Length: 66
Image (cartoon, rainbow, N blue to C red; front, side):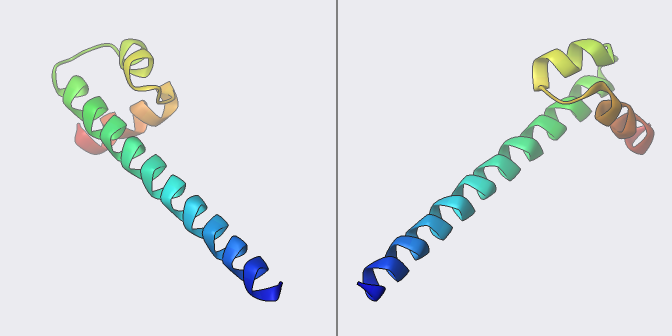
């Protein structure tokens, strides 16, 4: 019983870790896309719609890449 509980917990942790890694990769790609669109002078509001990032976060990218 204890072993199966530990196995279930271990599997849950593995799933959560995988989910987090996927989310981080998606966020990384959204940021890369936003940087590219900023370099093409696309309006920040439009970039937010395309990438799902907040305008405030895109503004920070503009400062970093500007």
